[in-house]
Image (cartoon, helix red, strand yellow):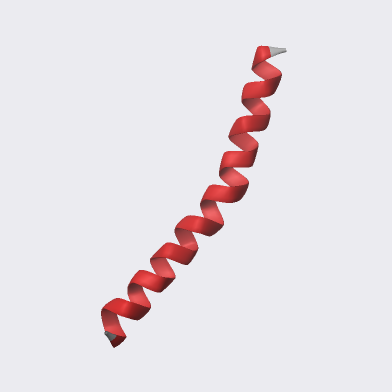
Length: 35
């Protein structure tokens, strides 16, 4: 039960975290080169 919940939390963290990191990196690159 606990392991199942941890698996879901990890999956959600990956699903949310990867696009967020990509977005932050893209914005950082845009502001870094353009600003």
